[in-house]
Length: 502
Image (cartoon, rainbow, N blue to C red; front, side, top):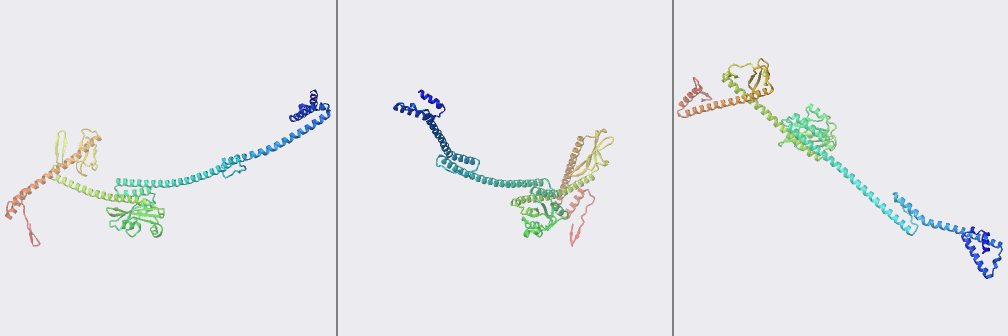
């Protein structure tokens, strides 16, 4: 052991690697065993042999270690590349898929689990691409469908708004018709409302003349139409334009600025017209005119426009008829009022002639008749009037059916002016006086008529009581003289064409 320790110290045992130590130990063990057998043959080995042996073993050990490290590194690199390259390729492919690059296909280089995973990724990418393409197509189809529906809804909304505006125009025209009776005022308003609500370039209303030979333009909204009104534009019924056609046949007519209809658009006052429609105005099955509508658009009139404008034409026809009836009624009423005023005037004039009294005067002492007229000039043309005198006076006309039949004059006891409520009271009393005077006149006239009828009945009875014609004549003359208070009554025969009549 001592020699071994010396040898270890001499050769630097601590500096040897594990493999060198094992080889050297094995050598020493072999040497020991051999030494036991050979009885210490190696005991006397010289230090030179040991040194050579050590160097040789050390060189071999170093060589073995270097070769082992190189082989390990080589095989490690080869094995690492074989294991990591498919994974790296799969990772890159998955990253590409995640970024949306679904057209890429990961190459399958192995048949192990990584290869199966790569195939699964490729299949998943293909299915995902198909799904995305399908979704994109569905989205595109749905978007297109929504766009189509949106356009349809927009068109429908425009139609609804247009129809609402048309109904509003119909309602407005109807309201205007019920509130305005004068045709000269009504027709221009109707033309303007139709143009504004329907958006038409020109709207004209034609009325037939008294003989039905011409359709005369009576209202228009456009500037050209107003110029036509100034020169009293008219069209011959059945011969000129679509207005002449509509007023002759009683049927609507639509014309375009193409083909045979182009001749209707040679109007310098309306140069922008490209479509025209005329609808007859019919009242009680009689054509009274036409509604002429013109647009700047080609083919501007739809079936809905025709229906709505036909309703408007019916309303205009009704308005024309109502206005004419109103005018006739007003004219007849005016004539009746004039006749009534004349009758009233004549009746009170006769009453004034028959009576010597011209009025009555009332004061605190009572009433007394007036036999001479009172100067009440300046009554204000039928209106109450205050006269500033020493005793303030209010003069109110007594009016019956528009005819002044008298005057009511009220004097205040002082110079104070009358208040409005006092004047209103005086006016009310004047109205009652007029009615009372009329009632009294009617009663007196009725009584006079009854007395006349009684006298006629008595005379007729006496005449019928005799059978002799001469006695009949004498009885009639005597009764007439007595009834009339006449001094003489005669019957003078007349000969008319050879016949004697009395």
